[in-house]
Length: 235
Image (cartoon, rainbow, N blue to C red; front, top):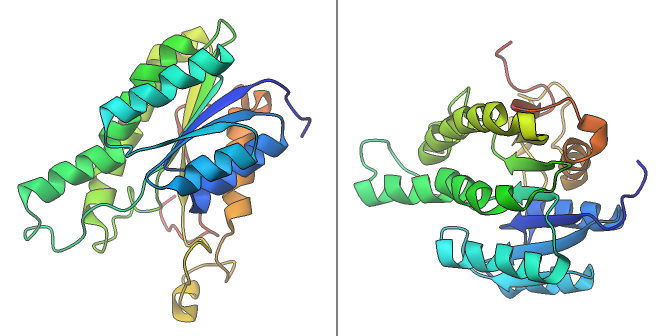
């Protein structure tokens, strides 16, 4: 893919794992990156890649606003947004407290809504692109991750509604639904569920994100892109 000089990407929860991999992929392909991370890792990575970072939580509206304002102040534009997230509360669905569910709402859903609200007005007349890192479970819920499954199913609906609303302005949005990725060790017996018999790599996901943010995906919006080695059974 041809490098795109000068484009600006804002990424949340991108200090490590998939988010960091996407930041590296974008930087190699000519994007300037602005990273929000809950630790200094994201700030260090951004500086390594020639961008800048903010230390803060993607659940904190003040830090999200700061990230976008500093990006516009420095670069005068935003072309791409990548929303990632850490892990929310887990447990039996009826044993999770109201606070647990509200934390899941903030972690997996409102973080995206808030960032889209902040960034969309700064997309140029040429439009912009959003990629949300979701999970393989919204359409085949995993009881081990109840808040993630519930609120990322809501994210799929939000994504479709946003695509309808802002598509006429040239703005696109898509979700990436990773299965087992090598950011964490995967037990061999779990890989028997995967037709390709391996875990995916951060690079696999990063290249998909790069494609979805690029002009090559200019007719792709409102979709949920599975990248799970064929593990999902629904058709």
